[in-house]
Image (cartoon, rainbow, N blue to C red; front, side, top):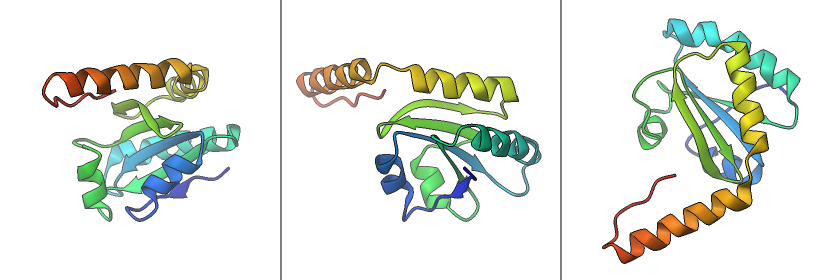
Length: 132
């Protein structure tokens, strides 16, 4: 599957509609982003069951800010709508493969249970936020 471009308008729906979504936050002027792009495209072709998306941080500044992007490239991985991985920096091909495998292998029943426990604890401690 080829990579897709995401915007603020379709980011949330894409994350919710697909089991696994990887998102590369990038900019055209970013050298490491340009170096990572072919690796990301190759992985996209190798894993047609995974959505490989890209967000242009220059065009999508509000979305990038909302996602907490402070350096690029940053790779995020979502599974069942949950952010399960986030890391700045250009990964080598082997590192990207490890991320895809790790995200696939997650026990999402356990992840959802942990999130529910954190939300419950946050509700009993005066509303502190819980982040996965």
